[in-house]
Amino acid sequence: DKIIAIVPAAGVGSRMQADRPKQYLEIQGKTVLEHSLNVLLDYPPIAKVIVAVSKDDPYVESLSFLHREEIELVHGGDSRAESVFNGLKQIQDAENTWVLVHDAARPCLTHQDLDQLIRVVDEHGAILAVPVVETVKKMTIDRRILATEDRSYFWLAQTPQFFRADLLKKGLAFALERNLQVTDDASAMELIGFQPHLVTGRRDNIKITHPEDLALAEFYLAKKLT
Ligand code: CTP
Ligand code: MG
Figure 1 (tube, rainbow, N blue to C red):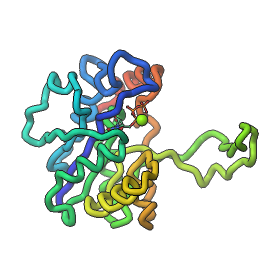
Figure 2: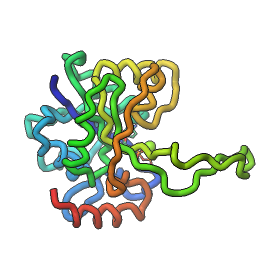
Figure 3: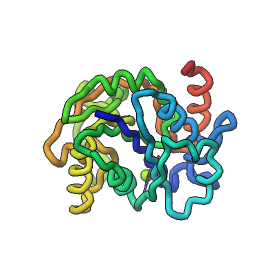
């Protein structure tokens, strides 16, 4: 079976409060999206990278390696789920394809992370994640503490997330048809009865979300060897 990467890059980055979507901010002379794509393009098991970009995206055409034959662009949607779904629609032979879905906003991914993840070949799928380190509080509607959860059961989901293309497509279709909000791909698989595996990732693999994350990503990228 072959592996195709799908990169949702059609968000607006509202929490980042920058002058452009965060995937187009530069770190060390390259955009965040270029950093993320480079890791995927240089990883031999990946045959192709489908990038979902916003319909009226003025930045994408200036990307350096846009014309590489392994890259395919599709239009994103109003939600991350829709953007990924649009990418999945481009895959012809979904029954025999595995997809790695990776946020454009996570530029610090490494090949070692990918090695760990694609080792799990199971129809339930698998995701990179890290154990929660802080104490987890569940809140009441008026923001008081209802309960303290047992931290050892809680993980923070990262990307990439790895699934059989046909199954993820089914899961996302299920969520989108019912207007169920899913903020990652594993959630869509859970909705149709799967239990994806948690693969221990690295805390460096941050999602650039708030302004202060940019400097952190720059630090991690500088110390990254791959
Ligand atoms: N994404 C997408 N299509 C959307 C929304 C998000 O492709 N309609 C992508 C983003 O570009 C990002 C990834 O999904 O690479 C993770 O989403 P998030 O971190 O929430 O990015 P934004 O939605 O852009 O940021 P914000 O929620 O702060 O507006
Ligand atoms: Mg968002």
